[in-house]
Image (cartoon, rainbow, N blue to C red; front, side, top):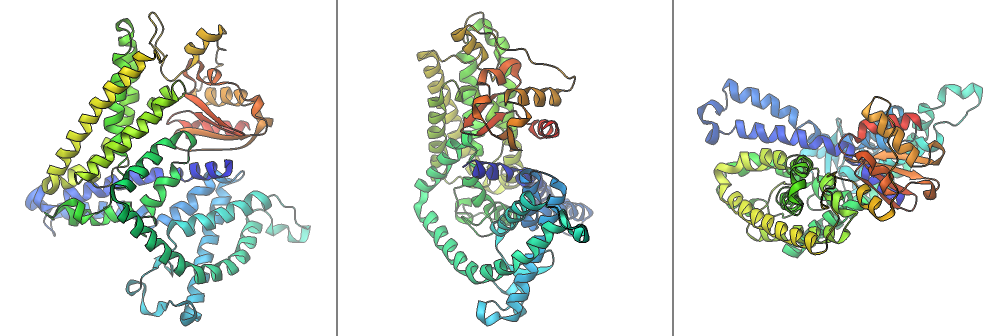
Length: 525
C-alpha cells in the first residue's frame, strides 16, 4: 500500500503542468472565435495567426502525454540520481515503441495490425516521437517508466568488473531495460488489443450507470484525499483510458472550438459527467470557510478572517483545498465524510441539469477552459451551475456552522481569548495535555527551516527509507513509525498543516511549497 501511495503521488508531477497548458488552449480557442471576438479573429488575420501559434504551443503536453508521464515519474520515484533515471526511462520507452513498431511491421497478420495502412487510417495506434506504435496511452508510459525506475533503484550502483566499468550506472540500467523490453513488447503486441476491447466495454458500463456513476466517482475522489489514493480515481478518467481512450481532458480541449460554435445542448455534445470536482473546490469550500468564520466568537473573527480568507481563496481560485480541508479533518473527521457526501450530491444534481465539462481545478482553470470560451453559446447551463452551486454553498454553511457549534468542535479561534491559528491542532492538544509545543528552530530559510524540523520530527535521517511528494504533501516511508512525533509537533508554529500516518507511510501536509521543502529534505537525508 505504501508503494501504491508513493506511485499515486508521483503522478502529480506531470499532472501539475496540464492546468497551465489547458488554460492556454482555452484562451486561444476564445480569442480565435469570430462569434466572440468579431472580424479581428477571422482566419487569415494577424490576430488569428498569433493565437494559432500560441495554441500550437499549448497543445504540446496533450500531444505528448506519454512522454510527460515517462519523464515525470522518475523525478519522484527514483531513490537516487533522478536526472539519470529520467533519461533512462525516456530511452527505454522509445526502445519499447521501436520494438512494437518492428513487430507489427514484420507480422501484421499475426497481431492484427497493419501499420502500412498509415496511423491516421487505423484505430488503436498512434505516433509517439515519430514512431508508429500501439496506443497504450499513459498506461504503457507508466508501466515502462515503473519498470525502469525499479531497475534504476536496484542496479544503478551495481559494481561491474573493471573491464566493463564503462557500462556502470546509467548505461547498466539502460542495458537491462533494453533486453527486458523485447519480451514485454511481444506480450503487449499480443495482449493490448484485448485490453482495448475490455476498456471499450468498461466505458459502456460507466456511460450506462448515469448519475449514480457520477455520484460514486466524485464521492470517492473526495473521500480518498486523506490517503492520497484519489489520484487513482480521476487520473484514468482525465488522461485515459477509463472513459475515452485518449482521456477526457484531451478530448474536451480538442473539441472546445466545435462546442463553442454549436447550439446543441452541451450534455449531448459531451455526455460525460466526470471531472466536475472543481465545483466542490469553489462552492463547497466557500460555504465551509464562511461557517468556520461565523462559528468563531466575535472577538476572534478579525484574526480568523486573516487566516480563513487566504485558505478559502486558495481552494476557490487555485483548486488546492487541503489547507482548508485538513484544518477540520484531524479534529473532526466526520465533517470530512459529510463534506464528501454533500459534494458528490451537488455535482450529481448539477449533472442532472445538464452541467458537463472539464472542471477539475479551481475558478481560474474552470473559467479559462469552460465558462469563457463557451459562455456565448452555452451560457445558460453555467447560470444553472452557479445557482445550484450557491444553493449548496448555503447548505454547507448551515450544516457546518450547526455541527461546529452543536458539538463545540475545537477549530482554531473557537475559544474566547484564544489565539486564532489555522491548520494546527496545537492549541487543542495543549489544552488537553497541558504540554506546550516545542519551538521550531530557524536556519534563516523558510524551506530549509521546515525540512530540518520535519526531519527531526520523523526520527532523523536513519529513519527515512524513501521520500516523494504530491501537490501539497511530503510523503515519507519510515523504518520505525514509533520514532515519528505526534501531530502537535508538526503543526507547532504552523510549520505544517498536519500529518497523516498509516503504518510506515507518513504524509506531512506542507502546502504548495512542498517541492522546495523536499529538495532540502532530500539533501539532508
